[in-house]
Length: 175
Image (cartoon, rainbow, N blue to C red; front, top):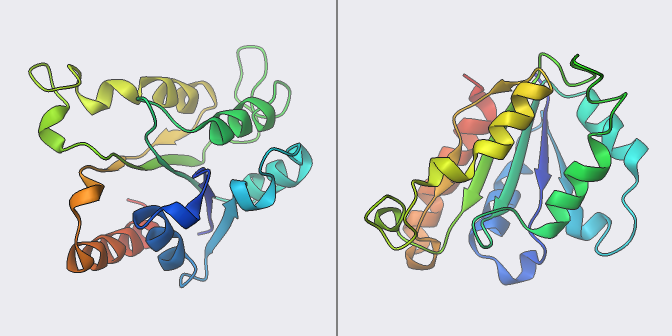
């Protein structure tokens, strides 16, 4: 059971939570990690290398901070360039990723209560994941329950350690 973890944080030096999750993933032998900002920054994405990395995985996990209700541009660019027609999907048919699973692990600065019809943002966070759910469906992938980590600015060291443990279990389980 091999997992490809695609990390779409644009600057991990400025991150406590995503950096801690990345560090935790490195302790799991069956997790193959691709940190897009370290590999490419603003350079061209090596499409063949990225396709090979995810083609060999059973599970694909996209890890990123939520920026303005979506993923950072480096991860969006990765999706646009790597999930190509004729490889990831065909005309009305799934492609190389069919049968694999897709899971999202994302962080927000805002509190859980802010996401809902009466909250600051006006929408459940789940609504922001619809494009990624549709992507999984179109590619013939199984959608796995996302891990949405709210209120990251408020997490203390003990909270980060609990989160690392949960993330470790998530990467090893793939229910």
